[in-house]
Image (cartoon, rainbow, N blue to C red; front, side, top):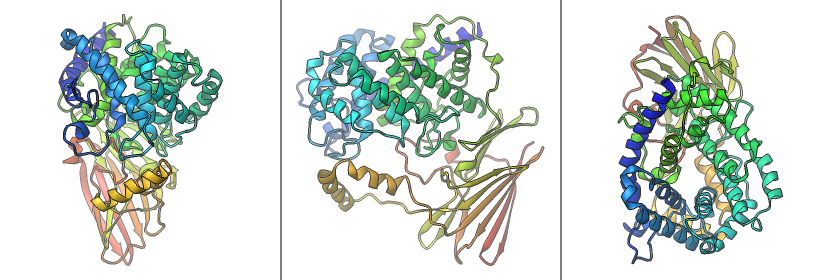
Length: 540
């Protein structure tokens, strides 16, 4: 059967990925039982001494080690993996109770992601009976108090991870967090989900973080069996499947609000269970075929992920998905019968998905990202990521996710607004000194300032920009207009890299070298302080 073959091929490919990456994950751990750092997963701290604190978010890799005991390549080392996993939990507890704990990027950070994800992993390991709750009780109490008192609405995957952590803490010890508190938090968290199915991630949808959210929704469900969580995960799966299927099954990369290339598999595989409704099974299987049957290839996004994020949720999701798929007895699923529940234009996300020339080309336009677009074909892709205007050491960019863009969908697609100002921030000893001083005294309040500086920049209404995209049978014509352009400016084609800071983005992609070869012509017309650039792309 086709469905069974997809599952089998996915297991084989994902197993090769796990076998390749597990030694790298293990290298991040201090494995010396005689060391005070035994169980620490931050190699830059315990070994290289390059960092003056251990990044606690990396401790979630302990859960990856626990899941890896079921891999064939580690069957003879089960006890060693379990011992190291216990040590990772104990090390987590020692750090969790320290002053302004839960650090990821700098000391005394009190960050929400390290709080949510590391706590979820440890709480799940306690529930598995790997380590007794009294060994990590102090850390769980601190974490529960912080999670109940905080809400992350700008990055929903983090909030859902925090919710899942509280669900497991409630299951372990209800006195730390009540069911009533969790019920209220479920409602508040699920309100972050858009009607189109995606969750808010820095202003828009991001398939990478949406897949992480699906993982965490399943974790929360496994703790409480609240059907609201699975209903939410299904809506997210439908949106993810739609976007993947309309990008030739390769993901949408820089069209995401946070520029991620990866999509993690665990939560997706959970929908293949026969007890789930048929439509969800169909969509999950189609995502598996599109993304994971060749996940061991050098061109797959898994090959470009760095060690840090293998120790985050990515390694854990991959290993858990293998274990889940192996235990599954999948019946025949006909995903070719999936009905399209989405229009070509999604107004909330601003995505336009078109199929042209009898399916020969697919086009994805991100209207809320300055009109960046990608033309997909069976053999290649071609992207246009807008423009960078250089003037007096500053950069003004059109490739920026924002709800401030004015968008119109008529016979053509029109995006208008102003370019976003960008200055590169240089890391240096003095800035890091100030960061540590401020963090020591004001803790988590510093995070708002840093996010506004690195991520949520205010637009300066200085240089106007309008992009009009005209799609015909054989050509795609792009008319870009710039107004109030300062004399002496340089307008250059933007590369694939986004100027917006997002930690897990910027993995290597072949488009870093070339954006494709569909460009037919480019014509520039400059009159006073106005510039018009007309670009044609072939659809033949």
